Amino acid sequence: MAVGRYCFRIPLVVVLVVACLPLPAFSQDAGSKDSSSEAKPDEQGDRKEVPRGINDNFLAPDLNAEEWQKRFEVESREVYAGRADVVKALHLSPGMRIADVGSGTGLYLSSFSAAVGSEGRVFAVDISPRLIEHIQKRVATEKMENVAVVRSNEKSITLPEDSTDRIFICDTYHHFEFYVDMLASIRQSLSPDGELVIIDFERIPGTSREWTLSHVRAGKEQVRREVEEAGFTFVEEVKIPEFKENYLLRFRR
Image (cartoon, rainbow, N blue to C red):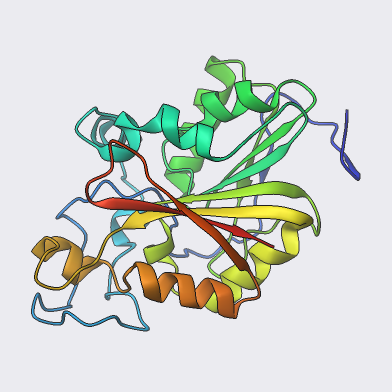
């Protein structure tokens, strides 16, 4: 099937394994307090580096993906409760190509798959081996034939140049240990008029939860600066009714 400039002849599930060494995972974060971190709660300013050990949970060889799905996909989690409004904010249409970077347990995959249709393509991108396995099974079980499962690495989403129209990063940007490299890879994989959508936690000293201040390295304004410095143009912040601790930013390539 032809999609944009690329032809994909894939079975029901495609896994592109681009690294064999353990790497930090980019997975949708549920705001768990289990993440290991050496950052102190009183370190309230934005930081350039992620807290030490932030990705350890997702790299664990005994990670139980079903248990993480129970934590990620619950109405008490804002990005789950507001998923319909989030999908609307992406302005998807049939035939589009979208990459879900840090796909995690695959929360948004069925919605994206339906939105882009049989002529579109969804890339479920993660570098957690156990979550990749989980997504494979989910894609097969739910018969999402337009979804390809892609294993990335710590500096690249490993997608071809001009292979996507939208890139979606949900509660995952703050897990990027090499955000400059990741943003360069993301920009390269977008079409000339493609868009990047980032959802992450509001990080406001004196207001945000202690967990957020110690776990999330940068607030919304700092994230916007980093993305703009990578060559993107800010489009808008979209207000999602269910969001109290999260924000959604749209950028154009």
